[in-house]
Image 1 (cartoon, rainbow, N blue to C red):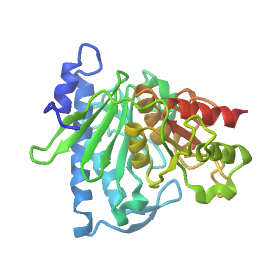
Image 2 (cartoon, rainbow, N blue to C red):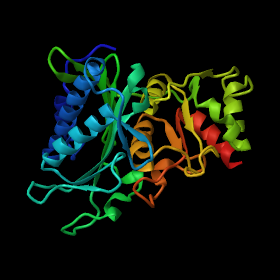
Image 3 (cartoon, helix red, strand yellow):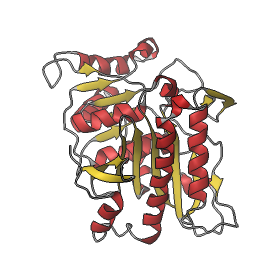
Image 4 (spheres, rainbow, N blue to C red):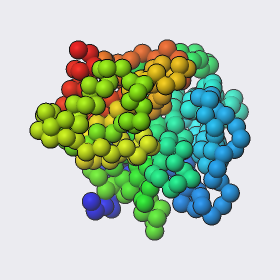
Amino acid sequence: MESTGITVMEHLLIHQKENPLATGNFTRLLSELIFSAKIISREVKKAGLVDILGLTGKVNVQGEEVRKLDDYANRILIYRMQHAGVLCAMASEENADIIEVPDNLPKGDYLLIFDPLDGSSNIDVNVNIGTIFSIRKRTSDRAFVTLEDFLQKGTTQVAAGYFLYGPSTMLIYTTGNGVDGFTLDPSVGEFLLSHPSIKIPEVGKVYSVNESYRAYWDDKVKAVVDYFKSPENERGKPYTSRYIGSLVADFHRNLLYGGIFMYPADKKDPAKPHGKLRLLCEAAPLAFVVEQAGGAATDGFQRIMDIKPEALHQRVPLFIGSKRDVEKATEIMSG
């Protein structure tokens, strides 16, 4: 799809009348987020040429080994966004607790929740990775931020999206008025509108799930996957299996072409009985995006956007993508 030549900031200003958030502090927030992503994208492109591949030797709050580029992306986002002057606090997949803006820096009323580098286990083999973000407003008028400010339903998000670092770098985001995609033009250093008003097909052709975990699934999850593999489904022929293992990459493909991504709960790891994906920094922001594109997202039983978080790093199963595909998966799971 060809670029229109409209930058993301110009697009924001053009639609300012329909989106009262696209002024002042919100525009500054998005601008700083975009600049951070440009820095991360630059490092991703040259990752094989410098010493930022491999592991740091640290373990994050999720119990996962931290990769060098993951750590770099996290530090860039925290530093840039703390100095943006529009946030009161942040939360990152990599940090156990909320990240406050220091008292010596200007603050605002926005909260930023992010996964600095989703799919980071694929860094060393040059597979698409990305940054997922969710923007919210604090719920209290206290002089300080608490965990409760972050534990909001997905329906309170004012914006969400992701940056995809692949053959090209893309920004996909929504402010609740549809979904638009922008591609970074390295010759001018700007994100240009390349995918206006993205709509996901109601029924897809692809199912994405890690089938190596089948032995750990319950019978309902197996029935869902078997439905998409069977010629007895709504399409009348089996869906094609496509699984990259990078959530943002699998989601992006299905958003454009239609399909369903599934990460159900399994019995593989007793420490993660509710699945692997994080509600606040992965499932909720992508659910906001997919719903605005005409799709759906559930945990197999209820809408992701309606789940009230109980913890900062709460995990949930995820069924996300084309609306009728997700509805069918939820019907089987709930039956």
